[in-house]
Length: 241
Ligand code: GLP
Image 1 (cartoon, rainbow, N blue to C red):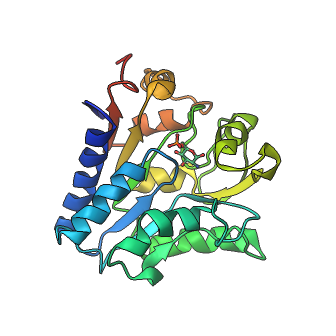
Image 2: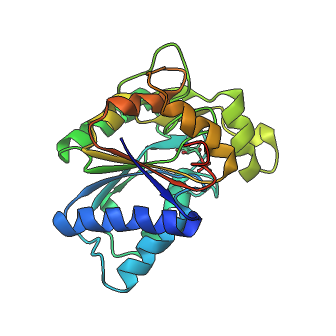
């Protein structure tokens, strides 16, 4: 794994955005795997800037998001579809039809999950997957467990995750308890992965994920088996490295 420790959040965001820009420059119809959460917000801001300055052309790019809550509609301000539109898609020259976020309101969620994996496959797989990391080591919504699931599936959010994500809702009871997430196999199949972490609260989990073992109770540790991963952390998240 490559590890990049940047001076601060701003330079972390720049580093990540530059890598995405490079991928698109080399392959204008690249397939991006995208993440939500506070960490990639700065990277999306940079990508919007680069697009405005004509440094990146998104017109042929396709995107697949990692996850979506079950039970809140896409117009809800906390849905991941809303997040992506608001932080990225509404501000760049992407063909909106090429942006994919799992549908957490689908009538048949199982069919939705299978169709999502099929769509990723039919686009030739993901060229670069962006990840954040939960304080408990989750990636996407692949929560710590004794076994992990390969493909897109429904997951029950852990208490830790519900607690962490309640900061975006009025009350904790409004936080959905289930989500659709791409599976560990989907993430491992991406040709390249960049995982971003910022701030003191991520320092412990970042050092744990780099310990010399793979532990399904720290889902991000599986990335050690991936041939092309870059962990980009700011000094605070990287303070134990
Ligand atoms: C959420 C998302 C993850 C994200 C994580 C960390 O639960 N499903 O994809 O990586 O939270 O979020 P943050 O970047 O806000 O710390």
